Amino acid sequence: MTVPRWATEIVQREAPGAVFRWRWSRRPKASTGYAYDRGDFVVTASQATPHSEVKMVLLHELAHHLLPPKLRHGVAFWRLFSQLCDKYAVPMRMARHHARRKAAGRSVFT
Image 1 (cartoon, rainbow, N blue to C red):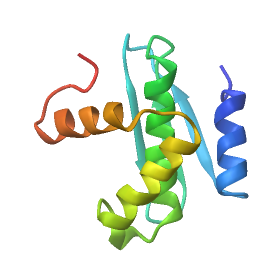
Image 2 (image 1 turned 135 degrees about the vertical axis):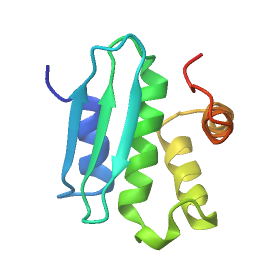
Image 3 (image 1 turned 180 degrees about the horizontal axis):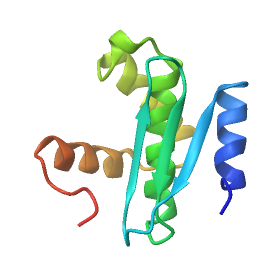
Image 4 (image 1 turned 90 degrees about the vertical axis):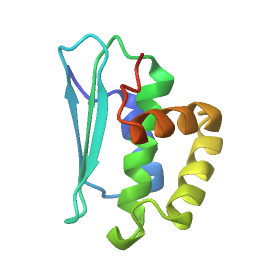
């Protein structure tokens, strides 16, 4: 399977020339991401995961990519992530819900 066109378009629009990889997971509901300090990032998604959740993960990793690593989850990060969510129609209440579940050590997809 290939990278979804919408994902490529978002990355090209927000971070021209960025190196990102897309992996498809065989797990029924999986969507994760990782931004590397060297400047690239990866998104892993399952086809069963709702589009809005996969988009949220992409935007989260993109925000990491666009900011220096020292700003991991600080105010500037959340401000940029919120702006990206607004721009690409991802409800921030959903993003906050997932962030709280992850911080509590629970699955974000239940």
